[in-house]
Image (tube, rainbow, N blue to C red; front, side, top):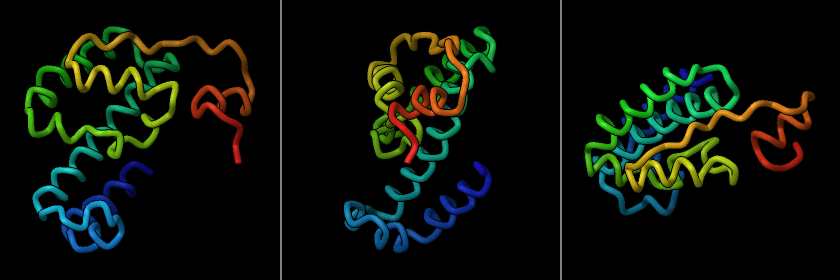
Length: 137
């Protein structure tokens, strides 16, 4: 799924006019701004998967800490790239139970709290609510 999404993102990056036509708020963006944005979306998506995997106990703490440090010292070390991580680049990270932690980390370049949360209940509805904050539609 991620690979297919990235194919679409790369197509949009390679054809900036398509991005401008799809998103009116980007109508005045330069080709380079669109390419930078699409790269930020891809990187944000990778970060989200790691964040959610740690939150759900799939990534060990040391792996998570290493991942967060890589972001802090490599990706966020670039001011032009850091400014691209606005709410528009996040997919799962827009959820009210995820965004505050991610936003603080991106904008303050500070400590990212360990997102690990043991799952107290089972079942698809409870899991959906934990991930997305509301009932499935």
